[in-house]
Length: 305
Image 1 (tube, one colour):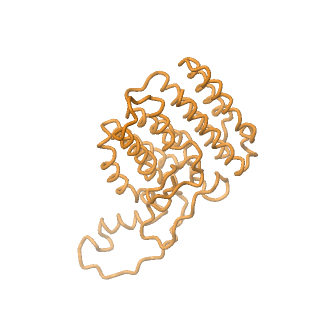
Image 2: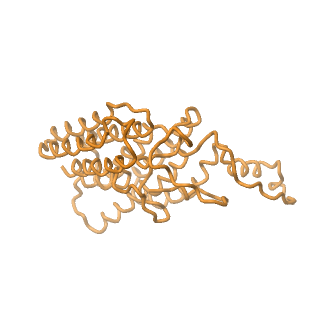
Image 3: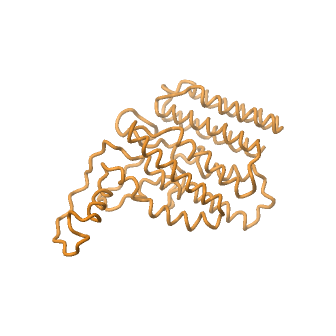
């Protein structure tokens, strides 16, 4: 999901879309296509829809959990969970695009004589508004949060306490990411993997019942896999993370036992290396577009085991 336009308040020009992949030139904290949700609150669809993302992970988690019936009530719950994990939680992710070195380019507002005490230039409310309207301040990244909190209440509460608790976890992880970015100026791949895979999977699982050991193994495996991909796109690869995640998934399926699914998952997980995934420093944007669908197929096959 692309949410770059969600929190643009009082701006004259729309935000530019995120780059196809991370680049050391320019904004260092923009998210790669792998680390953004799939569906916009305004109804837009990501240009990289066929990749592992929160919407697919929620659906895969529910599929793996084997609901008793795919009736209308369950499908409505599943759709609500997809919207919550992808579109609404994605608003909280906006803080991971915050650049502490940014300089506000918004034109200065005309000064008007203030007659009310709270509207005076030095009033606390006026100072707070200027702080939120300045994209060089950390509070600027939080502008869309009131909308996200309202939507979370409307969607998470009907889904139950687990959905509410996971929403609070998303908020906490996003705040930790903002602190991280202020220190390092790079979006933290580990927290992005939690937001992309771990928390959405737990939400999808909660629609059916408690997680099993097999479920936890798949969550760990795909979290490691996506973490490794994000590190590759940030040109700071830990080359062992993605293959380790694939191995964890395959071993989990063998122990399930689901040997056929394990073999097929292992085969699908190897195909991206044909496009250069083993050498992330040289992989092109076009090849990343070829890598994503195979990894999504790996997720769906493993979830269907």
